[in-house]
Length: 396
Image (cartoon, rainbow, N blue to C red):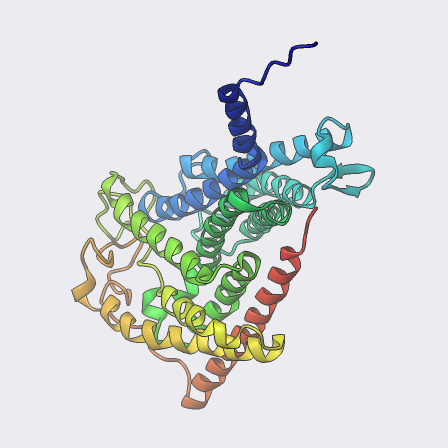
C-alpha cells in the first residue's frame, strides 16, 4: 500500500500567506505614477516659492527637476507597460488592456505616456520663453499651459489605472487602492487651486472673480474623485488631505534660507516664501458629504444644481469672513503665514498694506459675476459627476 505523506501545515500556511500578500499588494506601476504625481505637486509648490524668494535664475533649479521628474517617471512607466503588454511579457495584465495603433496596454498608460511626452516637450519651450520674453512669474504663460496639460494627462492616466485596478480587485487590495485614489485626489485638487491662485489670492477674496475661478476648478475635482471612490466621506477626506498638505508646506518652507538673485527687491528676504494659507474647501466638502445620503440618488442635473449651489454658497459663507482675518495684521504670523511677501512685492501693494483690492463693479455687475460663479459651480459639479461615473466603470 502506498504511503501518503501529509503536507507540512506550517509550510502550506506560509505559502498561502505569501500568495495572499502578493494578491493584496498594489501594482508597482500604480505606485510609480502616484510618485510622479506627488513629485510634480511638490515641485510646483517649490517652483512658485523659488520665484517669490529667489527668482528664476536658471532652468536647472531643484524645483524644475522635481517637476520634470514627473514626466520622466510617467513616460518610462507607461512605455514599459505598453511594450510589455504588446510583446506578451505580462499575460496577466494583457487581459486588461486596450489596443492603440497595434500597441496593447492599459488605457491609463496610454494617457500618461502622452502626458509625459507633453511635459518633456514643454521644458525647452519654457526655457526659450524665459530667455526671449524675460524672467516672468506668471502661472499662465504658454509654456506653462503646455506643461499643465501634460501634468493633467499624467494624473488622469494614474486615476484611470487606479480605477481599473479597483474594479478588478476586492477586499484589502481594493481598500488600499481607494486610499491611493483619495490621496491622488488631494494632489489634483492642490494643483487645480494652484492654477487659479492668481485669482484667489487673499486680497481678492472680496471680489466675485475669486469665487468664479474657484467654482470652475474645485467641484469638478472633488465630485469626480468622490464618484469613483464611493466612500461615505470621500470629499471631506480629499479636502482634508489637501488642507493638511498646504498647511505643512506653509510651515516648512520658511525654515530654509533664501536670498533674491533678481531685482528689483522691495522686501527683505532671508528664507523661502511659502504660498498662502489653504482655502477653506473642507467646509463645503463636509457639508456635501453630510447632505449626500439625502440627495445622492437624484437625477444628475437636479443633483448637480443643488450640490453645486450648496458647495459654492457654503464656501463663500466661510471664506469671505475668514478673508477679513487673513488680510488683517492679526494673521501676520507663522501660523497663518500672511507675514511673508515675495521679494518683488511693492510696499504700496494691497497685501503689504493689509487691504483688499477695491471693488471694480457696480452692484449689478457684482451679482452678475456671482451668478456666473453659481452657473460655473453647477457645470463643474455636473462634469465631475460625469467623469467620475465614467472612470468608475473602467476595467481596462
